[in-house]
Length: 103
Image (cartoon, rainbow, N blue to C red):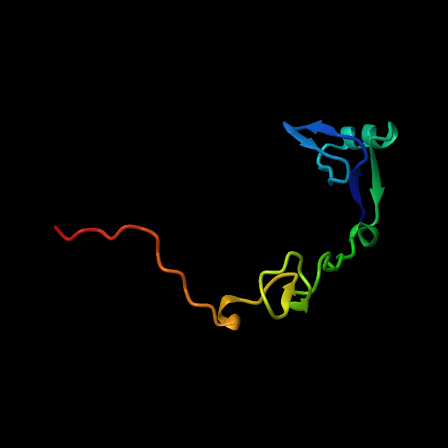
């Protein structure tokens, strides 16, 4: 059996269905009217499934060596996301909060 999909926004049963949402089928009178006036269409279950989209990086690959301007110093700069602090061998920063007194 197919599914009834909204083409236009539908307010039904105190719920607002947006275009592309599946509409309820328990009221045959409303189903008939929605289909007749073009507010909803029947879709097969196989066409309703959407394929997942794979994400692709929009920036440089993390940690590529290259030139950065202005340069922070001598040696190779990193273009893109720098490697983790542990990989770079960076020391942990001391906490900036005050110590509580024991008195």
